[in-house]
Length: 116
Image 1 (cartoon, rainbow, N blue to C red):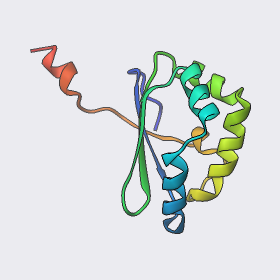
Image 2: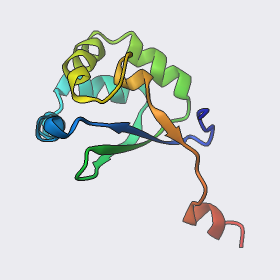
Image 3: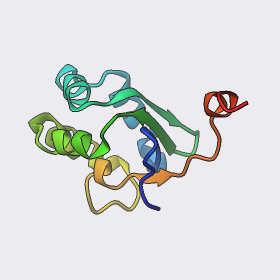
Image 4: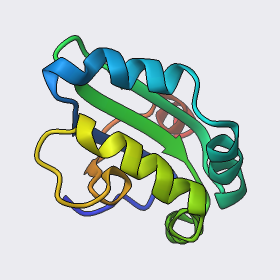
């Protein structure tokens, strides 16, 4: 699926069943330099949710997705983080942040309320 262009992005990935706890623990204490890099690259309101079977749904907002991706690609900490996370995912042959399966937006309460 192509990337939406709304400034709001939702993606999915799949964590291996035997890696769910390790993935959760890593995200409970993301490295401070990784947090700083995400912020500096332009990510806002970034959240990750995970179902019991390891389905990961992520959400973030940005004014410029390409600039965010370029900024993170240039961040040394991102290469380390992606390397540390790589073993947790099912069927990826590229770093997870390059493999997001973006979901198309179909409803937003505020958007519709603003039109009525």
